[in-house]
Image (tube, rainbow, N blue to C red; front, side, top):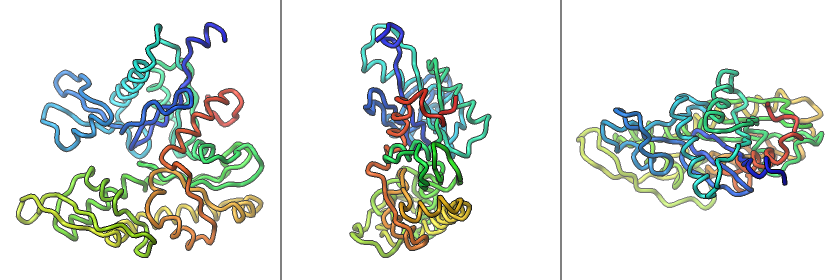
Amino acid sequence: MGLFSFFTKEIAVDLGTANTLIVYNDEIVVDEPSIIAIDRDTNRLHAVGEEALRMEGRAPENIRVVRPLKDGVIADFQAAEQMLMEFLRKMNNSQHSLFPPSLKVVVCIPSGITEVEERAVRDSAEQAGARDVRLIYEPMAAAIGIGLDVLEPDGNIVVDIGGGTSEIAVISLGGIVQQTSIKTAGDEFTQDIVDYIRQEHSMSIGSRTAELVKIHVGAAMVDIANAPEPYEVHGRDLMKGIPKAIKVTHQEIAEALDKSISQVEAAVLNALEKTPPELSADIYKSGIYLAGGGSLLRGLDKRLNLKTNLPIHIAEDPLRAVARGTAVALKNFDRFPFLIK
């Protein structure tokens, strides 16, 4: 190992709307919410990740709690840069390195990203200390993380339902043959739950509470196996203005999410319609692969199966599939033709 490579750290970054994951030496060293708390007066970093999430909806006037990414792309460049730098600092401290290393980084990005948004991601990584940056599209990273051989001449369709976007891509020979990216994903599902509870139960809840509802009783269909118990939700009574508690069922949440899930279904059908016939033949045999946190919605696989008549496979660790795929791409830094320089 040369001196240069000894002082070069290679990291893979899944810079997600909901969570940021950093992989180093095949280990996930950072897995924290993509959120940052900044002091309004001094612009100084107050908290990042899990600590900042606990402050969301509870912080005093002088602290601004920000989610730097929206719909899968950087909405607040300065906050994203601060957040990434802090995550990398945490990682460096845990490694106890003698000298600040040179960073070689692969960052995954949504497939529907613009050149300006792409530049913002690259600049954030460079400002955070990266010397060599490559980008990889999320569905490609998800496909690799699932374990598909993306360089083979076989057609595979991957549906990655993240926090900000749902990415649907048909992959063959190391490239994306057909892709659809929609801004209906985990964040939209959360907002659907907030709206439903406001309308049906006259109760106001925050997005963090809605996220917990989604985890405990989130469902894509009313009729599911192993239905969860009703979940108690706490919020503010809109009529009386006082704290209130209700119980919600998976059937209610399936109703709340129905419209958004229909949009994901439509995007999948749209991608299948535009797929070349030879690849369609492959997909008929291999089916659809699901990744991302949204794929954990109860009954989503069954619902997509009923809609497409195709086998549905959920990734073994759907929340980390993209990060793991990005890490594999990092090992093939100069070999994978689809890494964007």
